[in-house]
Image (cartoon, rainbow, N blue to C red; front, top):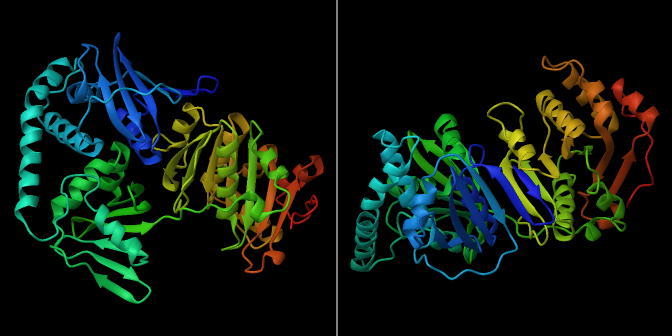
Length: 466
C-alpha cells in the first residue's frame, strides 16, 4: 500500500489489506473518508463518517445496504482511501456493526458451501436475494425479545452489545470487566469484584461480538493461539483494550480501560525540538532505553502524538498494551499487535512497509529476531522507533551482546552499527518532575565502531534534557 501525501489518500491491494481491515481501521479511529474499491474494471464506493458507513454505491449504480453488501464480497483488486472529501448524503440506515455482522455471517455460510467462485457475481446475487428478508427478520426477532423483557437486556449480535457494561465499568472506576459464558458480568474495582445484576452471558453473545470486532487476521490469531488482544472504542465510554480468549473451549472477554491522556512533549522535557527533529528523519533506528517503569512508552507515545498533530505522517505502531488514544489531527496511525512485528510471511512489518508508513514504532524489542527486523527496515525502508528495557548503557551492552549470541543473526552488532542513529536514555519515572531526565545520544563514526563491538557504555552524550 502507498500513501500520496499531497492528495491525503492511501492506496493498496485488497490481497494485503481487505475491505474488512479497512473498515475496522476507520471505525476504530473514527475517521471520515471515501473508500473506492476497483476490480476488473468495476468500481464501488463506501463513504465513512466518523468511522460509520453512511453511504454506498456499486458498479450497477445501486445504493444503500445492497450496494455495500455487494462491495464487501469483491475478492482482490485495489482500493483507495481519501480523507479530504465532501460530505455525502446518507443512504444507509443500518449501523455499521449490524451490517458487518450480517456480511460476515453470510460470507462464512457461503464459504462453507463452496459457493464463492473467482467470479463473485453469482455468489453475490444469490446472497443478495437472501439479505434483506433474513437480516430484517433477525433484527425483528432481537428487538421483539428486548421489548418483551422488562428487565435490562443487552443488545445482542452487535459490536456495541456490551457498551452499557463499559459505561458501568467507567462509572465504578473499575480496572477490568470480565465476561464469561454462563456467568453474570463482573467488574474489578479497588474495593474488589462487583457483579452486575443482569442475565448471564451467553456464548453466542461473545461470539457475535468477536465476529464483528475482529479483522480476518485477528480472528485467525484467536483460532490458532486461543487468545487475541485488540482495541474497541465505545460511544460515550471511550477506548478499551479487549482480550478475547478461550475458557474451557468457550470464548470469553476481558475489557480494560485505555488511557485517553497522552503527555505532551513539553510536559516531559523543556526543549522538545531535538525529539521533533527525529520524526523528520527518512530512515534509521532510534532506541528508547531505560529500566522498567522509566517512562519509555509514555515518551514514545508523546513523540508519536506530537508528530500526528503537526505532520502528515502515516505511523504503524506495534505494541502489547497500546493504552493511549491518539488525536491524528494531521496524520494517521495504524495499531498492530506486538506479535506481528516480523518480516516473516505471517508478520505485519511487510504490510506496514507496503502501506508506505513514514514511521514504524515498536514497544518493545525483546529478542534478536525483533532487533534484526528493526535493523533491516531502518536500513532499507524507513524510520523505526523502538523501546528496549535496560538499566543503563552498560546493561544495554550486555543485552545487545546476548541478542548477538542468539542463533538467528551473528551479524546483529554490525547491522545495528549501520542503522542506529541515536539512543534516548529515559528516566522519567520519578514522582518529582525535577528529577526526571532524558539523555539524547547522537552517534558519530567512533560511536558506531563501539556499537559494532557491542560496547555502548562509552558512547558520548549530547547535553541532557532535564
